[in-house]
Image (cartoon, rainbow, N blue to C red; front, side, top):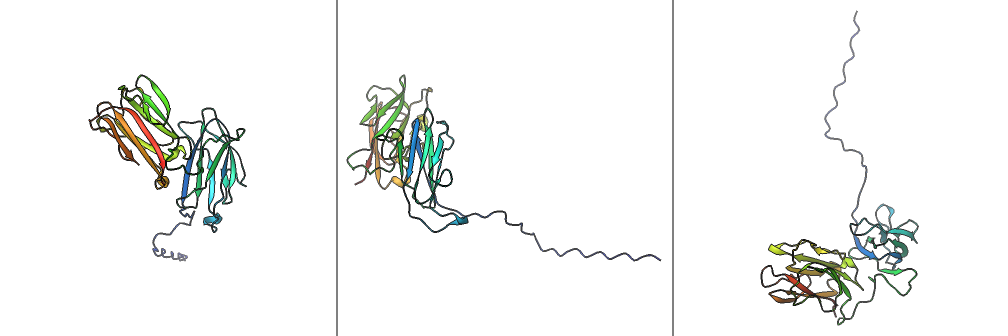
Length: 284
């Protein structure tokens, strides 16, 4: 006598796709960053206190500031030597201090404020061992409207190479028909290098992207003149300052003055640039 086989259980009803277990959660937060470029040396970065807010996502109390040394194509890596916070590189709303060592040739530090929409911690940067000297002064009092903010311009000029000027009137070789092939702008007070943005125009309508952090804009060694340029400030400064600039060209003469990102180009197509007049003014 055969033993009857057990009946197979019916297949489970199709309940649709099963959601996987939650592996993470996320929440968007506001952030604002500033790049600080330092010459070789040891510096203290003092972060001013900010209004504390209620506890935010995942138990983090905002605002909170992170001081880091990001990778850079122009500078070797800086070193965050010490900090006043409980966790290296982080400061809470009460403010704090980070000590940074910039290598030979200079270094760059990124200061990022999280949790404040459109705002960031005020920074006071000082070279240690030189109490009277400041590397940058992003938290300085605003300049008077009649006083341009001191700035430095580097021009790459044909047959001369890189030339460094303080922006006091015209820089370059006005009237000597020597082509400007590249340029950069670095503020020397009040503003940080990342606060000034600029771009260049070249032959046949060539246009570069906006450049910042005092990086050279244009070309070297290719014999390509600039045929125009434009300058503007970072968005959070445009209601406080005006950028005013002019360009001198071989055939067209002076173009401008132009302001706040307007294109400074010659009236003669592809006319080479030979000099720049640039200034940043605080609005009354």
